[in-house]
Image (tube, rainbow, N blue to C red; front, side, top):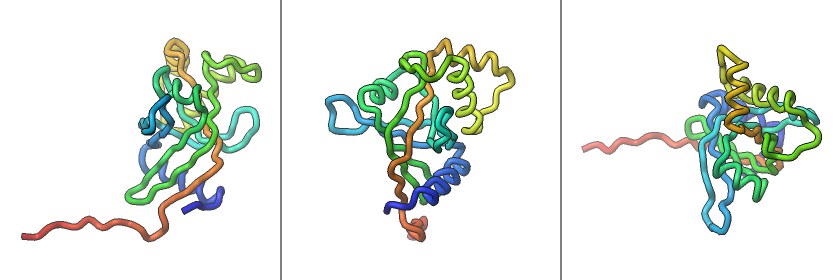
Length: 164
């Protein structure tokens, strides 16, 4: 069921906090009918240039980025117990392999750190973190929430046991 933007972001934030900031990422695969799915660490952050609320995660080169560069749309699903919330929208890629005129390398480095910290990450040597992200060509992915939906309140599932 679709929910309003403010309530949806609040639920998304709660689910991320309750499940170690894990989310299921769904993208489309080239020439295939089935989706491509992965688990990512995600966080709700303010866009570094516009201040708009976005859902961010960091990705290394591979299928995620290939799919998003070809078709920059993403869906993220979070959960807490039997409750879940999904967010879908255009994905903006901010990495060293993405030609962007409006963000310099220092802002990109800070963006990767901001997503990492917002998703619960802690590192004792941030300079090492930065050099690793650069060496691995990591990319910040920002999903602009256009649609948010969730299961209806009270739709929890109770565990049942078979008794002999």
